[in-house]
Image (cartoon, rainbow, N blue to C red; front, side, top):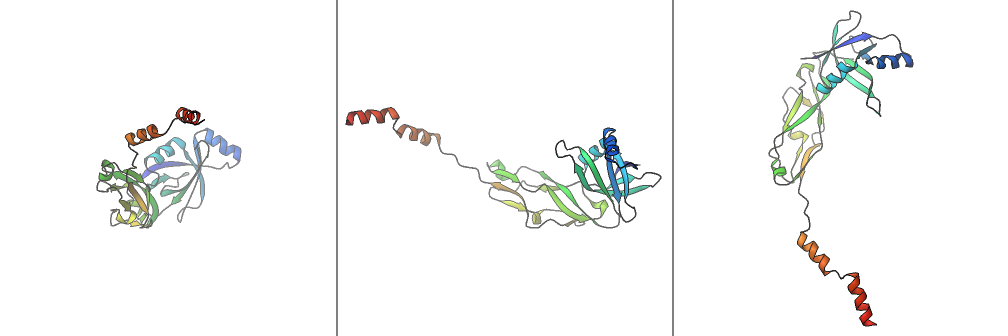
Length: 212
């Protein structure tokens, strides 16, 4: 089910006007596509933030201003303030529900890797997978069972289990995760013995006095 978001018309485009919109809790945006001419709009910041937290790559049912009806869209680009991560601008791309789209979905790792249980170090290298499918077939996430991965083993994109309706666009040879062997530490007794065998500065000075 698509998420909903309401758009409002935006006519003022000066820097001061846009600044005032952000002060009022609005995010400047633009929507465009085959069935929608490029239109400048604003959306509610709180609603957009909540939507991004829930599913940033989902299909959104955008209610257009001035009686433009509802259009299925996806977020194409987000601009943020590099310092405080404030939302500055959003591009919405209008899509057709009967045409495949290219997007990314989150990988959800489940299970306890046998290698990690044996002391190995789990390193996840890939958190999102690029896919292509019809808009209504985009999954909320793709589950990755890591329970059988042992020490020294890894998992590639080609080994992921995805529904047959989804075409994976990420490199099949890309590394998803690996489990490294645990690092060996020097035994404490050996370290202590090494310290005892090393002559102290005082003993070295005593030897030099006896020689003189």
